[in-house]
Length: 183
Image (cartoon, rainbow, N blue to C red):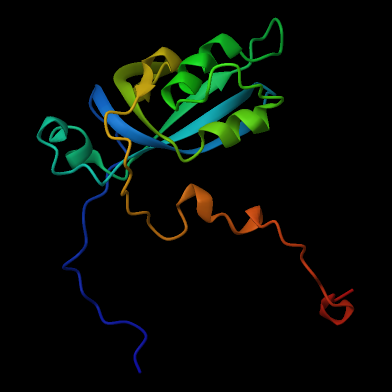
């Protein structure tokens, strides 16, 4: 049995350039805290452009052309307080329909409440200059996240990309036999 037969018929050109400005239907694929080398912290949202809406005429120039693309949205901690601007998170909670009055005790609770949820995002394509170099980037402001027009999700995930398919989210205890440990 052979390992591989060369077949280039499904090859596509993949571009990582910024997508055009517009309103996209996305899933909040992941929410996680990150830090730069200099210690600046952010809560980054991975917004995944839905692929289940390709046939919707009003989304022909957005979702149909750019489905499966990821757009990252950073929510930085304020330097003077070392805290997140939680007022801006209210737009995201409202968009995913977390009931008013719900108490979220941590960033982790916030991330769990929004991960995997469909929302509508206005994504801007703009110039960003850093160290004298200018390039096009995508930006999403929290107030540009709103309730989805398509709450039924039939997105087809690639591999284990689906937010709920995390093998480490198991509630079962992991049992390791002493003989399995090499040291």
